Image (tube, rainbow, N blue to C red; front, top):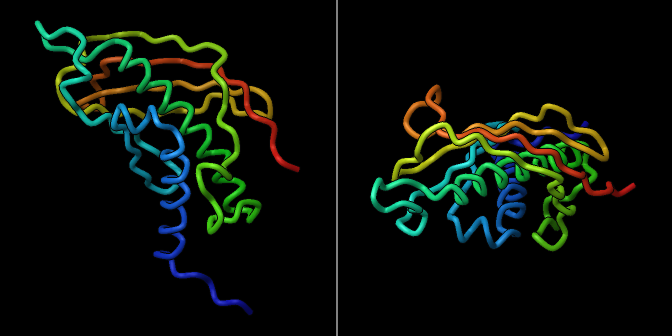
Length: 167
């Protein structure tokens, strides 16, 4: 009987898979978005930078940056859920996982944003909830906050076309 792998090895492999997924999108790096992983749950982190300010008089985060952060969080969460299943079942070998060998990302059909208040000049966090995740179509709700998880500054809902899965 094969001895189970140590949990630290499994965590390192999962972190490597998430890094490969995120590092494959230059815009994520440009906006300085990272993802904190706890099991299969992801929290997007938009690290503050002066270039993200849209209205210097307030100052407030640019609305386009807020929308991009929500959409990126939705796409990465959808992709992570897809990779997680393949990863856990052994269909994806993490040792050979690179941005070039990853499955294609979901394509946005539509994405709407509700701006609830101004995003302040500080780090922001976002989490996505998959409302429906099928083989061809998925629906996602995303919320973003800064200091208080219960005080959202924006939320979004998106519909995505899922890439074909390898047989």
